[in-house]
Image (cartoon, rainbow, N blue to C red; front, side, top):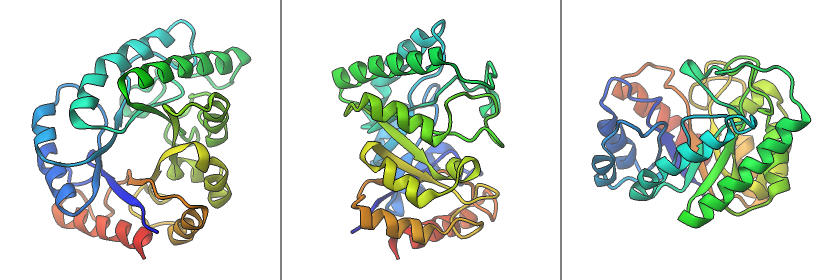
Length: 263
């Protein structure tokens, strides 16, 4: 049983223009993940022939803030034409608005009942939008210890609770195991519990956020658990290359990633 493997073009081959990164990833047989597609040549990206597994699905507002949740919907709708042209399968959203460097635009360190209800209602509206256009929105878990302090409802158990309660085919979970390891651990039990609502899985090792094999996570054991559970979806490498931003370092990182999940 095999997985579809994808690579985030934003985090490897940084010395190359984005279009060249996409070509290089595609030529090695991987799907491609993107972040913000605004200000990018969507037609040129589509012409690469690459299969795009995910992209950022909003650029304003907060899923859990009643004063700005409408901005999430409005910005998501503006990005849908790019997603359709690229054939993107999942549009990624986060529990709250991220700014420069992934930091919270409006840091909040305690969650409230209103946040839960607003988050669920916003996801319901995203589900309807996704169903209308044939795309799926994926809610990504984050860690608040290192990379994203001040983002409420960001833990994997929180994002899983929201997505599973909604239980809609056009809203899934982007299960990020790098973030989950930093914030929660117990990854094998997590992937088993989250599997029915998981649209895609992202990986990177800890510490460093580099390719599998550079840190503490036993990704071969995770891969075995996923196979045993029947997962055949996308696993995306959202990680930098430990050897740097050059092409050779990127190739080495992608080989290590493939080895962890295809062996």
